[in-house]
Amino acid sequence: MSSSNDHLPPAEGLSDVVARMEKARAAAIEPAPFTTLVAVTKTHGEDRIRPVLDVGHRVFGENRVQEAKEKWPALKRDYPYIALHLIGPLQTNKIRDAVSLFDTIQTLDRPKLARALQAERARCEKFPALFIQVNTGEEPQKAGVLPSDAPQFIAFCRDEMMLPVQGLMCIPPLGEPAAPHFALLRKIARNHDLPYLSMGMSGDFETAIKFGATHVRVGTAIFGERQT
Ligand SMILES: *Cc1c(COP(=O)(O)O)cnc(C)c1O
Image 1 (cartoon, helix red, strand yellow):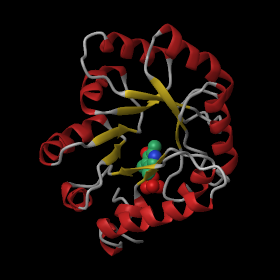
Image 2 (cartoon, rainbow, N blue to C red):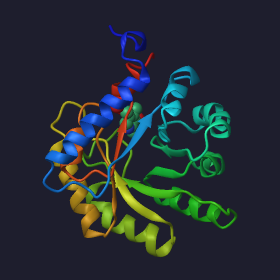
Image 3 (cartoon, rainbow, N blue to C red):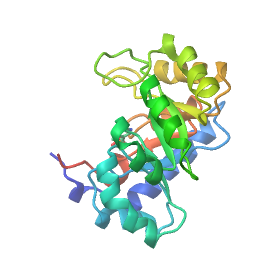
């Protein structure tokens, strides 16, 4: 089994991924106007994150509010202009922390959460951008709204809750070709004039770019395997 220690140093992993992204964008027929690399730092400590900050990367993803709260306030003090994305499920009792820490929440997926975010927004000066998570594979254990419920949920969040919904996010089922899921997510986004598409991880970010990803979420290809 590989460990993070036999992987490239994180800064080299980062430049490797950036080069692969540029190549994929150059080859894509219809790439998005830009593709932002969200470097996923879950489970990794400061020793691995700082080298990537030192070479100028500023966009990061974490999947747990608590873990992000322990790691990122100190890093934000040391490095200006960090943009932090929440890419894991959000419990309503963590909303206050999430709203103050994150610049984008990619996992809006249910009316109860939309209502709680709306209530929180009324008391905040700064409020994150929101992406709606779509369960494109209709997997029972996975978060996200079903594709068939997406139109209604998007309308509810935007028009009734007046939330700043800017895009969609998906995590395709493991062991299935990702392309049809990326195509479906793009179709839903276009139908609703949502400009941002967060899709693609270490194993499939080049495919996601081909389908118009504006955000790819890449952990392992930058930082190596996560220790569990
Ligand atoms: C962990 C995680 C990623 C990154 O996965 P890698 O395969 O390590 O690149 C992307 N998106 C989400 C939602 C994740 O939880």
